[in-house]
Length: 311
Image (cartoon, rainbow, N blue to C red):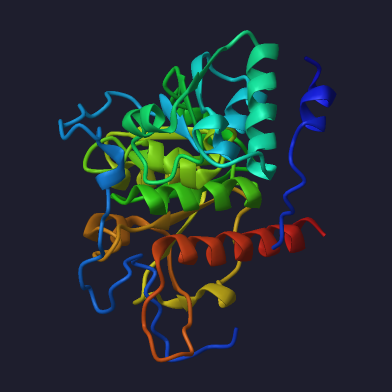
């Protein structure tokens, strides 16, 4: 199928997309203020039978759930897809707009020679690892890791570095934002960090197929490498020296945003090694932003700065 033919099947979902406040901005990423614990609901990523699923050695991403995520998996064509499971509509509600999307997914799978199985909703639920699979599951090869050195060698690099992120819902939302903002790569730690689970693929809505993901042994060392390569590193932290909207010049074209984990934020070594610490000013009564929300704000501020630099 030609690229233009592929694109013709895409949905028409639109992409839409500061004054100083109290000086506190929780870019540490948790839902709880003042360092409280953030709920990390990973329940949907384990098998429903109650067994413990083995942590993947690589990035993961071998099970994709949700209509948009499965459709993008097929359209991208970047990795082999073994099979697609689709809920039989005769086992549930009648035809709807959702049914038409599932029909579209079935046709795409057939076009690419991927086996399609119509199964009962009960069967699909037993195979699912998220709370809402939207009637479709795909099984594919794991995502391939991007080369970290290649990512930082790009003179127009726009990277996200995630320091100890553990919530799959947050990672999925961050990847979706990253794709929409033109991020050229996302870097995650190999240890004590979330992989690409079915919840991640569902929340990312297909972004995992388009955003290169690299894993590194240690995030602080990766930040040092970025600095040595001439990439500007900006860490989001509530104790930042600058407002995100008043970053000091010059901000080099290659740039990396560094975000911390839910609740605890940037690790001590990461905080010390970033070139600039920045805070998002908050004007309301709450002093925290979810890490994925903080990421969205920061990413599109970087987009604005980079566009002004080009102009």
